[in-house]
Length: 193
Ligand SMILES: CC(C)(COP(=O)(O)OP(=O)(O)OC[C@H]1O[C@@H](n2cnc3c(N)ncnc32)[C@H](O)[C@@H]1OP(=O)(O)O)[C@@H](O)C(=O)NCCC(=O)NCCS
Image (cartoon, rainbow, N blue to C red; front, top):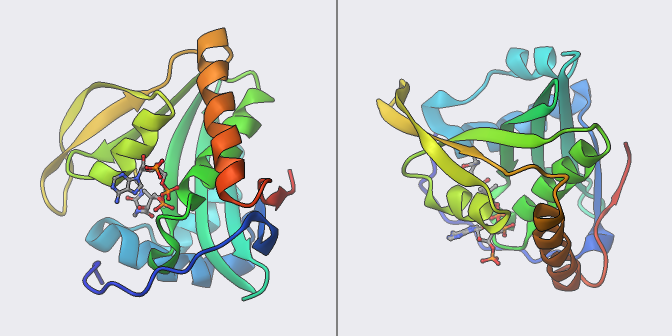
């Protein structure tokens, strides 16, 4: 399935949300968002099952407590002092509320406790909204991987942060984090781990 319909956007506040490690029982709900968000290139349920047990992986689920429903997820691999973001997605009905940012902030917060220096990722050359999210957090484009996405033969943009422990990065991160909190009713979603 690909993104064809536009369900109404639903607003959300931090108090409605919980962010915690992804569990095997989350995978059916993850797959509903995954198939819509990534089309033919999406991961399988088996891939998620493998990834959440992967020693170098760290995956989070964003739960809407009132609806008792998973509305987003993200994850990364920790490779020495580099964290490679492998996935991030928000349920289409909840996009535009700062939740992609909530997930990115959660990962960057966690990376900050793991002596990570650089966060890296690949993003489709045409994925403007995701790129804007990463630019907002001062990821820089470092070049392309030609024909990386086999479904459309599209190039991937390689993006990376400067040292996330540097004063400059921390400053941008702090400012964005404060604005995000204001947007979500004065705090960030409660979280575990
Ligand atoms: C990318 C994605 C996770 C963003 O989630 P979201 O909850 O809609 O994004 P947010 O509301 O947190 O937006 C945060 C920032 O991202 C950028 N952004 C998000 N959507 C955007 C859009 N449609 N157009 C332009 N910029 C956008 C903006 O910089 C925005 O900051 P702002 O609100 O101050 O302008 C979401 O669009 C998604 O799930 N896409 C499908 C999966 C995907 O492409 N993942 C990325 C793989 S690399």
